[in-house]
Amino acid sequence: MYKKTFHTALAEARRVSGLSLRQLEAVGGLPARRLTRLERGIALPTPEERRALASVLRTHIFDILNLPVRPRRLYQTLKNRGRRLLPEQKPFYPPRDRPSRIRLYAAQSQYPREMKALRKSIHQHQSFEELNCLCEQLALDSSLECLFLSSLFAEGAEPLVLAPYSLPPRLPQQVICPLRKVDVGFRPFPCVKTHKRLYIPQVAFATPSTFVVDFLCHQDGKWSALEIDGRGHDDKRDREKERALGISVTRLDEGEVLKRVHTVLRRRGFAA
Image (tube, rainbow, N blue to C red; front, side):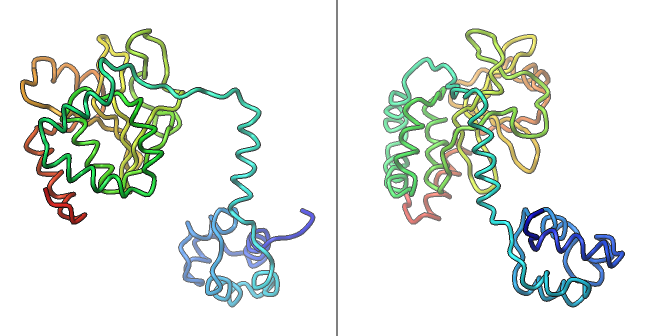
């Protein structure tokens, strides 16, 4: 507007040249999706990309080669400024029948070798203080879930808080507080994020019966549930629960969780 940037110049040069994104992809060698992100200012161009585009879009060659870009931090600044105008939603911590430290003690008692090795790895986590803060208020339903969660942290998973409704697609069932039966899916939940998947522990859904999943998962734009079935698991209502949730459900038994734990520990050099 007041000072043209690379992104505006690129869009103008493409229009003047009469090229569509697909046509520019064909002659310039850059994917159309990348070109869209460059024009919108979401991505920053490399020197090679500037030169490649300038050789094709000769009308604004000086602008494309030399005009400044919009730093990505500016978008975050604008977002943060907008959030300050909205009422803050307090994080929602699912109710728990026992403090998380009790689950930790139980896991250490049942799986001493594995938990000792996992804790050594976790204490080297770059976000250990944040992780420790999150876990103090985390809801878990069994020592086996604690073991599984510890394996996520041992392989570098990050702690965070995030509202389930903020991620697409829309969940087929309403996320509720299992005690008050009110919608809480718009509030930030404690989460754990690996490089591929997001895990939200102990999420309750308003189906004809209130069902709670051990972990609600999000990966590649899809929702699923992960159930950790320990010793003595009662499977009488499993099928009813899976039909009511409307999302795919994966189940891990104790042997499968232990196998995963040992794999993580070997990779990290902390074999139990």
